[in-house]
Image (tube, rainbow, N blue to C red):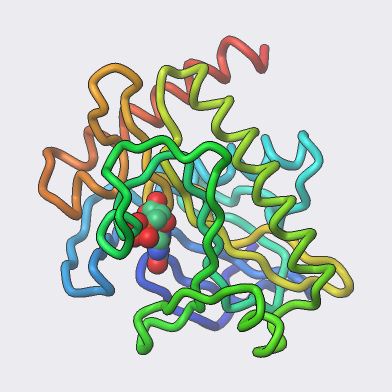
Length: 241
Ligand code: 5GP
């Protein structure tokens, strides 16, 4: 399957037209950015790590009843996805307080959030991805009331599935960000689910295995990502015989 014209270039992925109607080709690049693009680097193999992990989770979630945009992998850093109209929302689920929530609100890093907290940010770098409440989401016409309720339920379901999965690997899913898009009458999970878009801590040491390693110079980010990929490969060998 040949890549067509470049349709969109994000900070870590490029989207190309596909020869097949209703599909796009998503290339995970080796670029890594943080702090709204202020910090930038390239790490060889990073795109493949994130694409492989995303494909695994899209497949895992589909098998557990979550509809996603994932179609198939073309190579280790390229996937075919359904062509959606993205909803400009970053939906963040938090099980443990970390990152921006500890800066904006009086939560202590590591504080358990049970039940999990869902926050919704408007996806717009030029505005600094401002936080939206339900009324603002409805007023902006981003979702209907029913869609908003359904997306929150789906996010909680995804959180439960991913939390339990990582728990088995002795990791804590601290938080993650997901995005959804419209595909005909359906709303599907899109974008990616990778170490770039979640926080993962070792259960015992609370060591980070995610983009915080890069954001806060906590060590070698490719080693950290590689350890997650290896753990998932190990899980696959055990469970997908
Ligand atoms: P925070 O609000 O603490 O910065 O982020 C919460 C979670 O969402 C973290 O796991 C973080 O990696 C993820 N996240 C927030 N904004 C973005 C974003 O613009 N891109 C990506 N890839 N992940 C994000």
